Image (cartoon, rainbow, N blue to C red; front, side):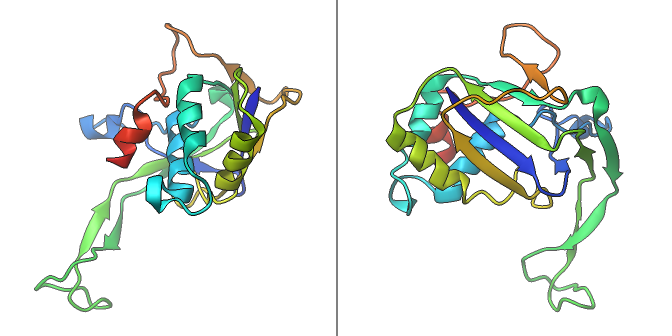
Length: 198
């Protein structure tokens, strides 16, 4: 058993939906539960890959790819409080002839609006049936400790890794991967790490 627990320190999560319906003119729905691929990407970013890794050798990431999709424990979608985030403007990091008053030689760009989700229980757990050896679990713990946020940077998190299952919470529902269902989420697969590395 491998369990990775994500605790949202502000009690909120912000990330676009996996289908990216904003591009079609539909309102943003937000992604819930946070996808396993999003967690995997955060683990990759926490310590890099290959010669860019400083704390681990990356073999723990390849091991997660082989475990397949996990079960996910998270609050029910119907219990989420949603707050729409209006369009806003940020300063572009490039020089331009027309400039903003406060940032010389910079212009502003619109940032797409989104949705901030507040789950009933600010904890999400990812559960894999497979076992990893203690060295790989320790490497995952080191990576997890370096993750600062999941989704957008205004969703700070604390991520912990365990090789034992704790009791579930009545405030959380358990999603189990299958071939049919109402929720579609990206998951890590063999070769996903290579794609991210590229």
